[in-house]
Length: 192
Image (cartoon, rainbow, N blue to C red; front, side):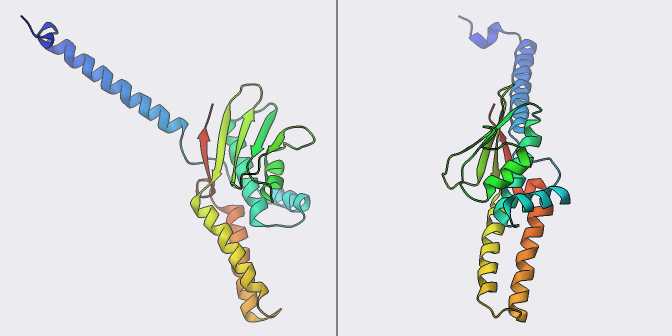
């Protein structure tokens, strides 16, 4: 009685193994590219940041976080038609998402589900494609440091060197949110 492996010629068996291995590598490579955790758009320009400040009423890390989430998700989706954003926090980031993506309550392009998560899902209504945008751990820590710095600044006497130092450090955090590469601020995951 012959063994199953003896039925196959060695060259044919080797070719099958190679094809199988190459196929697996291609599947993993495509999965890695499609679900890459980095973002690729450029930081927002000064005009967009000024428009956000006018819309939101002031500049804060939350509104800038939302702007970065929205702009990066829109770029990753490459949607040109009607978009729908769903964000998962009811706070300042909602305004940033509205400015970054162009979706609003009024045009029924924005939904908020308050889970306290700094993330969003953006859908291209025509194609059904979806991406999820989340803050990186580094961006989350920067937001926390801003809150701590502004708290320390308020505890100091107005105009004191200590207060000015904390305010300068807090402004540096805002500048980071305005200018840091997207890959440091946002991760993107393709959902559909």
